[in-house]
Length: 102
Image (cartoon, rainbow, N blue to C red; front, top):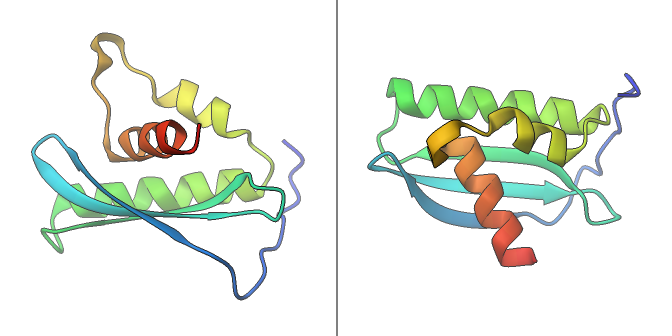
């Protein structure tokens, strides 16, 4: 990681995805750097104010900061991989984005 944060434009495109994870419904959003790499992640749950939504939002913030400091998306995906195929909201969203943009 470079340690220097890559500044994003104030106005930029944003893509939305609706998905489910562990019986909860979420809306996830991603923003990209100019070269197409994912630069930021947002996650909101339909059950506002729950621990599940708060945890998903916190994970998205940390992932966004890591991406903007040069951490490759593959490193984040690898770190979130769990045996048995279970995944939290962030991993589920990133997998969905990867599948739809592949």
